[in-house]
Each structure stands twice: as C-alpha cells, then as structure tokens.
Amino acid sequence: MTNSSPYLVDALGRRHLPAPQARIVSLVPSITELLCDLGLAGQLVGRTGFCIHPREAVEAIPKIGGTKDVNIEKIRKLAPTHLVVNIDENEKPTVEKLAAFVPNIVVTHPLAPRDNLALARLVGGIFGREAAAESWCAAFEQEYAALRALPPSPARTVLYCIWQDPWMCVSGDTYIAAMLGELGWRVPTLGEARYPSFAWSDGLVGQLDAVLLSTEPYRFTEAHADALEKQLGIPVFLVDGEMMSWYGSRALAGLRYLRELRAMVEGVAG
Image 1 (cartoon, rainbow, N blue to C red):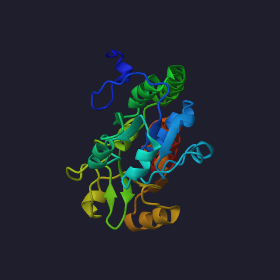
Image 2 (cartoon, rainbow, N blue to C red; image 1 turned 135 degrees about the vertical axis):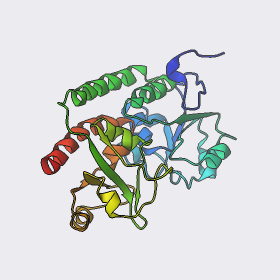
Image 3 (cartoon, rainbow, N blue to C red; image 1 turned 90 degrees about the vertical axis):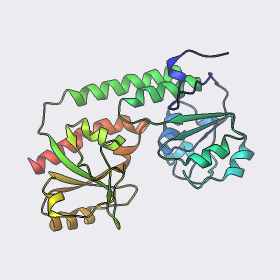
C-alpha cells in the first residue's frame, strides 16, 4: 500500500503513511516545538535536552540526550513508532543505529523560510493534524506577505557569526543565509564549508556593511557586540539565534523578527 500525497514525502524522498496514533521521538528542537503547537505533545514520548519550547509542554516529555549524543537504549525502551530527525542537526551513524528498531524515520531538511510550509504539512499529514498544519501555513503566508510588502532597501553584505575561538560564520547555502536573503542581504563567500572558520582582516571587513552576532550556538552578548564594533569600526548587532535559525513554529515569529532586524540595521547603517 502506498500513499501518493506530496505532503507525506520527507527530505530523502521517503513516503510515509498517515499514523495518527504514532509514538514520536523528536531529535530536532525546532520541530519538537512545531509538533507541540500542532497538538501532538501527548504523542511525543521523547525529546532532546535542547527541545525547550514550548516550555510547559516539553517538561513532561522524557529527555533522551542531546541532538548528537543520543541515549540509544533509552529511546529503545520508549518504543517509538516514529523518529523525527534533521540532516544538519543529527548524525547519520546515530540515526542508522536507531533505524534498526524504530520503524519510521522522518528526515527533514528545510533550506529556506518557505520550506516551512512543506515541513508543517509533512508532519501534520503523517501525524493526523492536517487542519492544524493548514492553519499554521495560512498564518505563515500572512507574515510572509507582510515581509514581502516592505519597500525595497539597499542590498547589504553582512557577516553572520555563530562562534568565536575560532571565529565561525554561515555560508550562503544555509537556512540563516536564506532568511537574510529575504531582506536582500547576502553573506560573503569564505570557502566551501557551510560554517567556515575565518580570521578578521582589512580585506574582509572592507566587504561588510555590518556584522551580526548570534545568541546561539555561541552565547554572544551585547558586550561582545560593543567590543567588536570598536575593534572593527563598522556596525555590529546582536541577533536572536532562535529567530534566525529555528524552522517550524519559530519561523513564524522569525518572519516578524526579520522586519525588526531590518529596521534596526537601517537605523544605524543608513
């Protein structure tokens, strides 16, 4: 038996049958939040320690380690029927071990903001929350239309930093870069890695209109931003990493945040 719905095909092209009674383990913090918001908290039998939203709902869901240091035996005892993973966040060897006893592995890989529509429809379709997923998609489309309705602004080159010691940033083929692209902003090419290491140089700084320091995974603060701005002599802004990098539910607020970010940067950079 097969299902031809386009909503039930995951990032690896695997088809999934509807499973409204599924027992779900999520290894993806942003998708754990989406599953809860679609009304599936009661079917989540396991989540990572980084799955912190929505806080009240996830407190009752057992932790099974981190996104990479997963407790495989604990997951085995939870007897899930479905495991939700992400290509960027979870390690393939770990997922392969889990696939030996979890019947259904749902693989996700959003690369741009509008990929969240397919993501919501995928999990809503598999887990019996189609109506809730469509309602979420309608809200997303409304926020996206508001973002696209903004008047044109100057193209900017910004460096989005995610770590220091060593300094690391995002490349142009990441979800974060796609979010920035919605504002007409681009990130510089600093090698072939998706998250390249780099050193500050006059040549690099001369390319930039601004630097953005993310609050995650490195916990940059306003103090970091102030010190770096004095060092570089160009605008440096602290940005909310969850709003910029979490897909699923947080992407809805992320679209609103992009409008705020544009206003903040334009107010300083002109």
